[in-house]
Image (cartoon, rainbow, N blue to C red):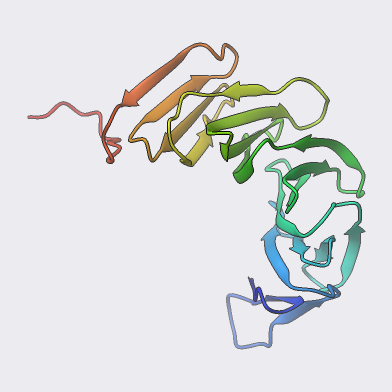
Length: 209
C-alpha cells in the first residue's frame, strides 16, 4: 500500500502479478496516513480533509467515514486486537474509536505527540509527548474506559523510541538524552535506567569474553 501526501487517494498493490493497484478514492484533501487492519481486511486512512475513512481491501470501497476527528488527521492506526482505531489530529487530540465509528475516549496531549502505540492486547495506548513546557514524557491510557493517565517522566530530551513489553506491564523508552529506561506501569515510580549519558544504546547483555 502506498499513499502520496500530495494526493487525496491511497493505492493498494498485490504482492504477486502486475495487476493495476486498487485506488481508494473519497478523500477531498491529501492523505496523511494509512495502515492495514491486523486481519488484512480493511485499511484506515487519515486526511487533511478532517476525516478518517475505513476501506474494504477486497473491493476498495469506503466502509465508514469517521467524522468528528477535529482537524487534519496526521495518524490513523488499528489496535492489535482489531477492536479499536486511534487517530491523532493536528490540534494534538488523540481519539479512540470502535469499528462502528463511535468515539470511545478522547485525550488532549500536552505537547506535540511524537508517536502512539498500543499494547499487544490492545488494552493500553501510549502517547509520546515531547517539548511541551520543556517536558518529555510518555502518557499511558486505557483504550476502553476513562481514567487518569499514567505519566512516565525522567527523560531530559526528546523520546524517539518506545514500546510495551509483550505482557503490557512495562514500557521501554530511549531518547536523545543518551538513556534508555524501563518503566513498570503498574507501579510508575519503579524504573530502571539501562544506560546513562551515551548516544549508543546497547542491547547485547552477554558477558564479554
